[in-house]
Image (cartoon, rainbow, N blue to C red; front, side, top):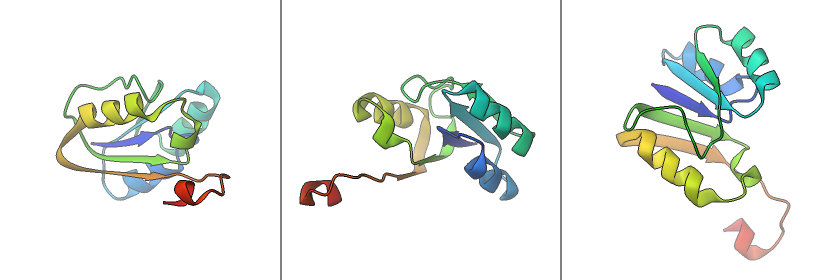
Length: 107
């Protein structure tokens, strides 16, 4: 199973579904999920925060989290939740953009 964490309108959920993954998407916005459900009707979508995923332990093979981690108040609970739901030897990917121009933020 693939998780699109903070899926928004389902862009990456659709990408994963077209490549044969069974997809679950979570987002905190019901309005965004309504768009995602129309875009990817074969996926399952849930209103949820990233620190409390509605999934059992060790059930996800892939997590994509695009453009969301810079909006959470703390990364530790979210990353712990990703680790909880990921199967051993699974993969996750995230994009983080920041307007902070300090050298430490670019590392």
